[in-house]
Image (cartoon, rainbow, N blue to C red):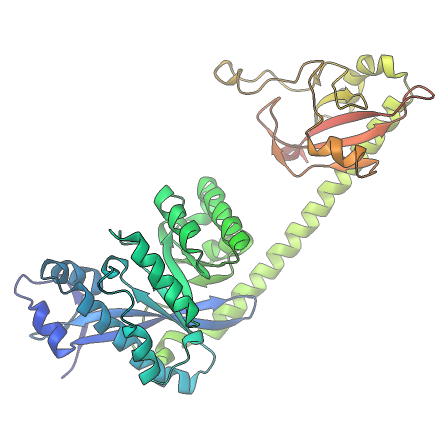
Amino acid sequence: MEIVSKENTVPAETDVLSLIEQGSAAAFYQPIISIKKKSVIGLETVGRGIDPENRQLIEAEKLYQLSSEKNKALDLDRLLRLKGLEGFTEIQSKMPGLILFLGVETSVLTKDVVGSGHLLRVVQDLKLDPCSIAVELSRSETKDPESARTFVDNYRNTNFLISMRDVDTGRESLDRVLRLAPDILKLSPSLTANLSKDSYKKDGFRSLVNLGHRLGSLIVANGVENEEDALAALELGADMLQGSYFSKPQRTEISATLGLKARIVFVASRFKRLMTEKVSRDKDRKVHYEKIATAVLAGVQESLIEEAEEKFPKHLKAYPQLECLYLLNQDGVQVTETVCNIQMVSERRKYLFQPAPKGTDHSLKDYYYSLVYNGLERYFTEPYISLASGNLCVTAAGLLKGPEGNKPYILCMDIDVTKI
């Protein structure tokens, strides 16, 4: 009998028990893309119920609501998993080397269930390689975190990959990531949506990428709906992409991957051009930093150290990109006031951002110990928020010869990144 593709709201009369008993469900597949490899590297299986009466498709989320009320969530979960795995056996014969992202409803992982080995037996019966399957944990709350941890450990030890979906910057989500250390983090679509236009989302996205990479996890940006968000995710470090921009979930892998090659190549080309331009801009900025630092160091060196502070305003006027200048002694203690080229910060933020006064100890700053202990003559920090102004800046630090027989001094120059 034909399946009606239109997904419906669950009618009150839908018999979820009959649906489960009859195995009335279907698996859809959505591709997961690697732009660096210019290929589809995996498929997420998305389960749908099929209403036994009218053959309409029903979203899994709605079915879980009904099945939970009847204590059948585990049976539903196993049914949807089975359908996804059965379809994947045929897919592998046509497209070997793909990874199946197989969802597991976290709420069903209790001590009565974990340890049964049910999933492993199904995979073995279907002659699938566990290494090709990423067990993907849902975000659903579990009342038994230890059982969930045991489940992850058991399947990791039998060579399954572990994935976690809908990861965001919330405390609960981060706690789960740190506790389970999955192989793959699939970031929440809410974080990916409009990523290219939202600087706060970019910061959160970048933080999760950095955390995941430190844990040894690969990052999937889920929910990619347009080219610009795809490029933003890649620029921020995502390893893989997933979303309707490439393909919506489809019944077969042929439909799911049809026409993707051209789009993947196009995004790869755009990303390559974007990164080439970024590298060029970064190189130009560094050249500017070097020119300013070289000129100011030479100008200050011509003066006596005792007169350096008096000369600072002249250099600040000559280089509007400079925010402030200050001098440290060999112990990292500031021996001049911070002479600034910036307007006063607002009254509301005056206690957050203040120029460091004479006598401030900078010996724990990276620019100090990089010069003193690593033998460098010049050092440039990464961009950071200046505590003097609240602006994004880099600090250029360089050695100045002190009076004969004395250790050198360190000249520090804060340069406003936005003005270069």
